[in-house]
Length: 577
Picture 1 (tube, rainbow, N blue to C red):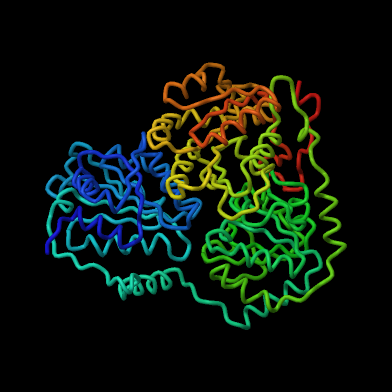
Picture 2 (cartoon, helix red, strand yellow; picture 1 turned 30 degrees about the horizontal axis):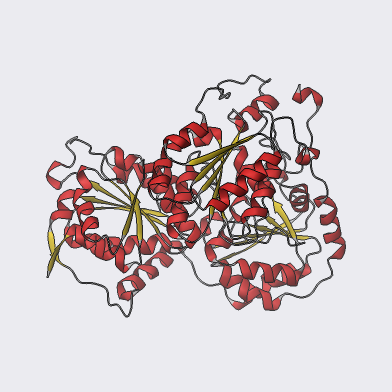
């Protein structure tokens, strides 16, 4: 039986286990949207207010479930509006398939209305992309796109389909239900391994690494987002406990190791803890697991762990020796490699080293517990949300101070419960991501911690939240400024606050009311605790306008380019006046 190309898209999505897609219709993609209408019992479509939010929602869906997220948009501006979301997923290695449609074959390359070379645009920010010009290639391409997106180091893949391909008919051959991998998928996987030059480490290589770890006196683990991608949280915990090695975390790994565990030193880097930064500085072995040594982690690369050996384990060979030279390395899946190393780990007495780490953990800025008049301390906000919402609640953030405060203060204990934009640092990410999580996991609870600056960029998605009655609680840490940029202006630009003061609307509660969403204001800790409990327990969409002082800082802080041990722990009077 012949079916249209648009129906082929639906059949392939169903084959891949897709239950939800996020998108926005338009002229070139109309045939696929018509097929979605006819197959609404098989695939749920979430209409966002803007295509960028569709990409972020697909991203949040993927981060919270480990599955491939899917977003759709039409040609031209619809496709380009996905770009920031695709780049966000690319930088954080998130499996996503973005499906766009373009003008028909006979109009391609003629500056046709809403024509754009989206494969050219997205080439640097996708793991791979395709343009489908023949319906005979459509099913194979979509299947390959999904396998590429989730294989090895995951990432976004774009499939651009010409409009006449979605209308053309073809005899469709479904994958055998008994084997959704199929020979085609297996062959694709083999090709990917060859391209990435990935092979499992030998037993001898594993033993060498285990010996390096066993002989270290002052080792520290630097856990990255690869732990989460690999699903290696249990292995990390077992490895750390058996070896008694402290665990520092990148921003992407803040929910990969229980924050309440004695071995956890929390975040490392620019806004990392004293324990993490000094632990790495004075270590004799840094064990990097699925981490990429970003500039926000290492500061001055010449002075990062300068007295230590660096052991790097990662699935992507391109990351080895890219930013930091290693002494030893292994290429492969973190979960698999850790499971092979753990039996070889010896019980070593590292009490003196861990006592030193515990001493550093006690050194925290005094501002952590100081509340200024008519404002709420960000640490109190995080602790209150955690106390009321519980450890199973998913937390999303925007980018800026709200993100750093959450990373610094929120005691994550469950994997995949912290969703934030790391590598690209995308303001406007969090609301779309919260939508994606809530749609992926309808029974879960999601709290979105935003800054008033970032939330301006995506507040139109309140329409999406209200329309689908998503019980997301949005806490706006409202300091009336682009807080992170203002902080840098205070410290490094002579307090010249150029274009960072946001003392002009909107009234967030009035805006919430316009969208039919309940809202509250909170000016102090007592008010916040009361209204957050009310908002969360209502089980409905909600906004809380929580006042934070305009000059609240994110401390500790390492100035850009400085070594990670050169932390600003307290501000002088001159800095604050």
